[in-house]
Amino acid sequence: MEFSFSYYIGLSGIMVFTISGALAALEHKDHHHDLFSVFFTGFITAIGGGTLRDITLGNYPVSWVRDENILWAIFVGFLLVILLPGILAKLRDELFLFDTLGIGIYTVLGTRIALDHGVNFFASALLGMISAIFGGVIRDTLMNEVPFIFRKEIYATACLVGSVLYIVLNEWNLNANWNLVISATVVVGIRVVAVRYNLGLPKIKIFD
Image 1 (cartoon, rainbow, N blue to C red):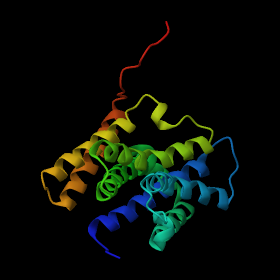
Image 2 (image 1 turned 120 degrees about the horizontal axis):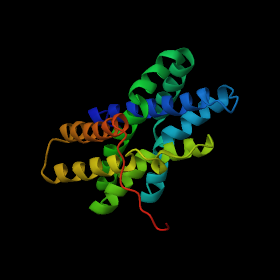
Image 3 (image 1 turned 90 degrees about the vertical axis):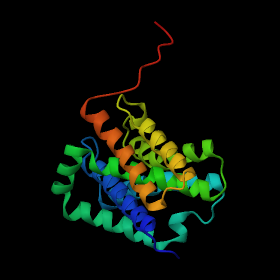
């Protein structure tokens, strides 16, 4: 197995998404959650998007079954939530840190995996976006919350922009590591600005 820069970035994305999901379960005001339910919510948040991407691509076994380091990253994220819940919650509340970093990393890595499987550019961009958002959709559904993609702030669109940027820079033969950093940073930047200034796409009105 190749332990490259992007591999370790991917593991960090797994960890931050685990933290995001576990914190959401731990802090949910309408439910009491034990350790298993907190772990499971973090786990499904971390692997949901990547699993759907791998199934779509026919990439079996799916990544978290194939690579035990992914499970270790999930366990570390869960352990951090249990040991440092106050500190992590404060960081998340102030900067939307974990969701934002997670979608940035997952977007570009999901796009790259799709391209590596010979998928066309349009489908690769969509799969990059799905990799980033689907775990959060499952998490919010489990928590009986409205998923982020249906809320006002720009979310999935930021992922799609980052995915398209990654594809363009890849076609220009930019160094893969620089491409990862730049494209993920663009996703994070769009998301942070959208949340801070309450920006969203125009609504479509079908009925008056």
